[in-house]
Amino acid sequence: MENKVKFEKSGFGKRMKSMLKVDFRRMFKSKLFYIIIACALLMPVLMTVMMAMMDGSVSVDPQTGMETVMKGPENTWQNIGTLPGEPMGGAEIFMMCNINMAFMGVAVFVCLFISDDFRSGYAKNLFTVRAKKGDYVISKTLAGFVCGALMLIAYLLGSVLGGAISGLSFALHGLSAGNLIMCMLAKIFLMFVFVSIFTLISVAAKQKAWLSICGSLGGGMLLFMMVSMITPLSSTFINVALCAAGGALFALGLGAISKVVLKKTSLV
Image (cartoon, rainbow, N blue to C red; front, top):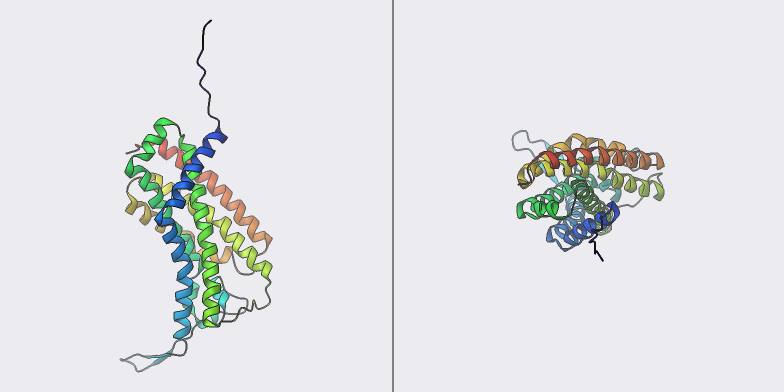
């Protein structure tokens, strides 16, 4: 009787489950991941407390003798966005240094996470043995998205903690808790757009982490100024839907380009 050896073909679902399991295990065991999350949590606390302590302090220009009075934050939610009818309460620093910095911070994680695969030879071995390049791109995009979403949540918690320590107001000025939730959901879905950009740049730069970080920060800055307009504190379901649709389109489109880049370029 003839014995035939059958090789089981690994389907997409099985491959993705294996790939995601490896990537998420590596991510949650990485020191970089916890450093990034800790920075997202502590940054708003330190910034809010320091700005509140400097509230009312006067600085004098030695050349003109003009006095400038420092005005600190008045509301906890200034770390998240601009409240209706308030131009940030005079604390212009929060117009740039707010929760939207998480979109730039996740670039560091994605770039180092991917470059480490190519620098160590893990990616080459992975593609040779089992994984397909499309599976790799999807897995890295999802891992970066989860890290970015956790950074946004950590920044929100840090903002609340910093506001409580500094004794700031938690008033929403006519908005509701639903608006705040929609704002956060919109930002989380929008993270797909940025992570897809960073993944594409990282797979193109491969082991050159410095190049991927510089390219990702430069590319991210082109969209950074639009984040506050797309995801304001007054966000509704429309904002969430638009960010979710945009995130899905960018993830599919840039993911396909990333796959082509991996196929057309050397893995070393």
